[in-house]
Length: 343
Image 1: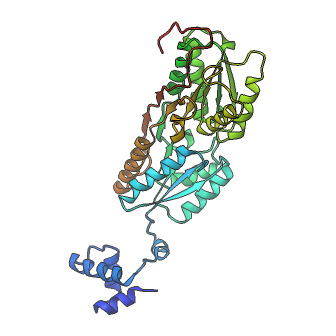
Image 2 (image 1 turned 60 degrees about the horizontal axis):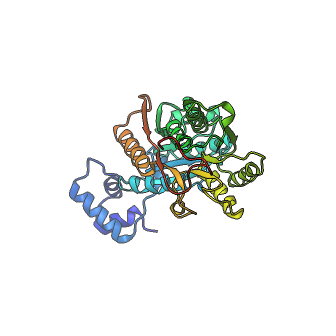
């Protein structure tokens, strides 16, 4: 392994000069820094990050703490964040919690111990008190979900309005038996999406029993399959279904294809997220598109500015992006009932 001593001998300078040059020390001339870096690159030198961290320097690693990498929203966010951070000389590290607050705590302990530069977190429903304390010592922001104990820096989506628009679209087509399948109400995203669904029904003057709700773990593909199977077997099944998570949408679409349900003839469907295959699933899935790239870029820029300015997490910052209703072929008027409204 190439060391700073090897570089020093090659250049005929002291080891301390090499170390300072590689650390961009102001006491070393730009010419010397250039020569040291050039030789270090030629010799294949790899800096000892652990040693630098023992001296109190933070790393160039930014952690993304998410519930489930299988959710394409999070994997796409990770990809976009990685590209944005790399352009600024930072590296993305991924931690997966499976929505378990104790797993979340273990990850945060490790990240804190390694002096990670910053954290972008999609928090669990009830973060452990120690997690709250650890995050107070790190530059961080919340993504998608917002928990009041973790500060006031948050990048999210207007979940209420997104689900209100999706449900209103179905009501405008003439549907009066609409089911909603979404994530748990204890999560802020789940609560806001459910509220948007109920708001659309109330604004349309529909009775309380016009809407049927089913709440489940947001990452449960199987729950999506099982729930739609049960709903379709009821004496008066819904004529329309609106979904509140990507994973639930995948489960529902799989079950509808297995049962050969006619969409939208037998059932109109509004999904959540816009997976690459959603545009060509069946007649094309009407769905709620998420502003993933914009959110990832915004998160990266905010965190980079905060790290460069050396500020804490005191000042509140909120960025709310709109979802987009993408209308395709999976929604139509109920059989035998023309629409009397404008979608």
